[in-house]
Image 1 (cartoon, rainbow over the protein chains, first blue to last red):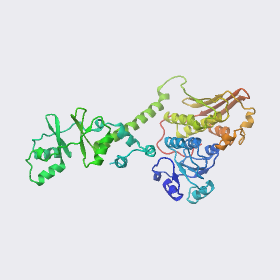
Image 2: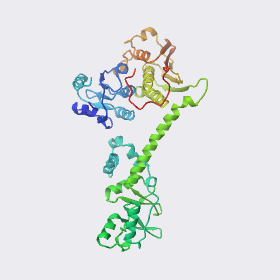
Image 3: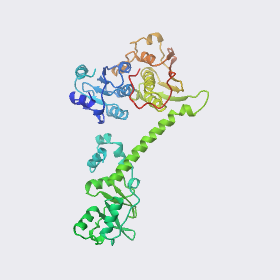
Image 4: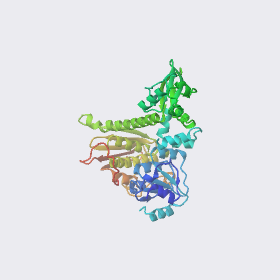
Length: 112
Length: 338
């Protein structure tokens, strides 16, 4: 499953600069809003599901080398956060759906 | 022609909005940075107005080009192209002088203008090659789409090589400098409650270690330890503090120090889930009480010196495995981290 397919199937908004999402294949996922838990639990290549949308999300995503961050419940990052994410090659995707449902859908799509 | 260049052609002619600006690629940036004189061909074969169309045929065939400037006494008087030649051939007019078939109204670009200017002309007209003139309208070269593509590729390769060289130089630091104990010390000042810049020092450290040739896993391990330590200064310290990283060939020492408030009970602070973070910090997803626990998982040694009112010193040390040393990182993607 490529990131491009995920974006289409889950109807996600691409918040950061467009990239060649077809070449990125997320491996598994992690869901939490507690940054230290993400640091400890997320693996490189994971999709990270959270409703936090501030600057430190970018730092943690870059630190952990996650393949993409899905911001749920319409969490809106500030422009400076988006800029930072672009600079650090962190992909931010958005959705209005709550984390619980997004995780369920990711699981159904085989991101386990 | 590359997709990016194609995209650029389509994009010229309208104002670039902030949104576009975010998407500007290095190729587009280069088309503004590079001057036409940087990419043009300088070795230009010229013809004279009274040369025959036969001479045009010979020149185009010999040099595999699609057109040439026509000069009279150092002045550009026209251009002659493949299409002009075909018209002459169709008329059976091979011995006619060039001036009968050449285009006299010549569009030129200036040698000091950016490459994007030439791209605009290519996109607007059907012209495939342009004479390049200096500030005195004197011909100095010719430019084609091919020249631009080549120039951009060369510039991109240069960017890439420069990064490679930077990496190479940095990764040989410890081999090239001989001493009984070589270390590189990085220092960062961390401001209290500066959540916006949180994680910046650790991301700089991670990048520095990768440049020095650390494995991605080692860089990640240090990044995590330093991130948690950095956030502790931001969340808890009265006046911020200093983060110091000492890189040595066989180990990395990391240390933070601040001047308060100090930890009353260090043992308690080390318990998973224990946190004294403020409501603000908690609302941002900090204060899980896992910071120090995470650090412990990433480092070989950790020590805390602290007392209320005297501030806190946190020492962390990572040893490189005996088979591991600073070397250029592998190209292949690596397995799971810590």
